[in-house]
Length: 231
Image 1 (cartoon, rainbow, N blue to C red):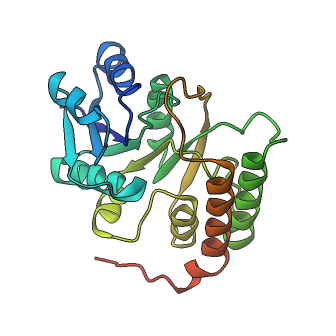
Image 2 (image 1 turned 60 degrees about the horizontal axis):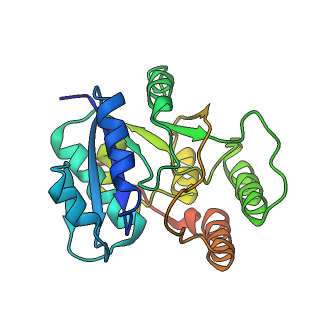
């Protein structure tokens, strides 16, 4: 058993999940993984069962937050010291897991795989949204997070335990902002991410705009009223 668990939330990823898991098991067998089949309507669950993957099969679609929390609770119950959120669509590269773990061992609670540490963010609506969320986090926490919307995030044991018991802890920038204000130490490691090869992303222009607005409102206003369970 590894001390690190790769959590792979997957919703309708029949076209990608084999490629993602097979690369992990073949090239990075030192790490454990769990696929969280989040009530998929396609053959994602059938593939996991047929290929004897390690997976959790959620009966209904809970969304990214619910799927991630199922995985983080699994990590907590199994005693893992590290857990990393890893996309089921093939965009995240596993060769960065080791460097992120090394960075965490310097004393950080959360390590983010950042696409933008060494390049300027320009152009698209996604870049605009990321820049605005970065500004909101810097304004409210005085901390610069270059890639706040990155879904490649690693958590230490303390964060695993906290995420597993807090129902309102989504794997999103507003939670990172909140935890920063509570004293969590967050670092970034430069990574390269691939484009989705198959399937469709839920982040359409409309959804991306809605997401950006929700995150800004949450970071700038709602997080001020959250209370942290110290247990």
